[in-house]
Length: 407
Image (cartoon, rainbow, N blue to C red):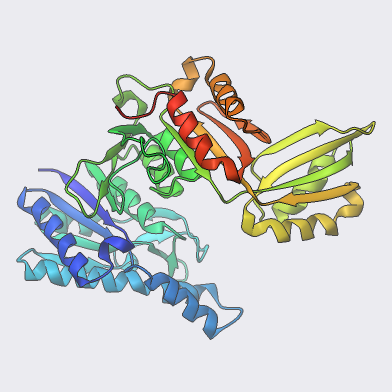
């Protein structure tokens, strides 16, 4: 007997037919003798509808009431799945975040889990009852208000619950059947990985791969929760996200990812003096604009420098407005912005012990006539910014160059 957590996203529970298929999968685990907790998202599209309703109700809305509204979609799914399981003869009940409770901080709309009281839940599991838990939601204990965990929060709910229950693993069921070496919609020779390390998955999630939510991977790594990404629609083995020690021989590069949500801003002829970077990035941070890649070049003019950095595409207008507001303190000569760029990254823990990984990337792109605009590196990843028109060519070329193509 094993204790497992199963998480089903919005597409997996999009209608009653799919909810019944989910119930059948849960029943199969119960029949195999396992203790099962299920975490569910709202049905596909419901959360967006609830957000739109909230915005139409009030232009400047109370985030506490926002959470009360948008968390209700998960309640519906949890109740329906519990009813279907009961109809199949499986003992089951639904749990809302406040009933467990899942305790969070008071950051409504993007709360962080601080603890889960699982004593009663664990007792019910031991007795053979399936717990169907509404994901994405928690309780702010001081004011006894419902909180939500932000977009993709059901993944975080599931991993946190698995950690608190000391589950053998957490299965995340989604519309893909695992983690691939690249986007199979673009790279036809991409292959599914049997296992991937927490660190690699964290880099992939943060660099554009939308298989798992970043915070859920961070939590899994922190608590050592074995996570399996599986298909909701096919009975296939998935990809296990595990500690590096569980993988016998590491590939140098495990995957090639990309992010389209990039825009490049360049400030030209900025005075080359101490504090100039703070005068640029300080106001951007205060405006909650996330800056990613940064490169500083010597300008053509003496005692000046050119600064290039990236921000999310949706924040370009705000970033420019902030920089123009502080133009006197920055004292730059010109500002330009470009949105037709993408970030391409190669990732692998094997990079730590192998030289020449960056050279392979740079030479491969050079052979294809692809210019690199910005470069950033970490211990297990190299990212470059290139023109968006070269995305597909870059992904396929790098995938082959690192020997990732399937046979």
